[in-house]
Length: 120
Image (cartoon, rainbow, N blue to C red):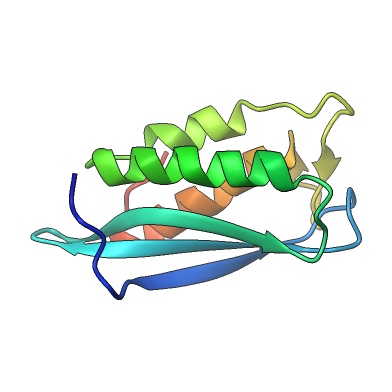
């Protein structure tokens, strides 16, 4: 497993849902590799602390996978497969999201595509 450098480059994505009045901010930090850049860790922040435990757990587990996997694209489908028991929601424009976690998967896919065209 690569050691974390003292400085990483990243992108932050704003996730708004009808489930909360406060947005989630997903930050994905990348590590430089011989082949370019790849995601190395994620962080999620929000004014809402309602779901603090699952947010911390999700960021730690996903970050651990990102640090060990050369190709983390499988995480996109795994995250998208998480369904909210209340039925999910629709984004502006009519796109259905199964859950907030599924939308995090969408952000990860968009980030991967921006880095190097990888994604499902």
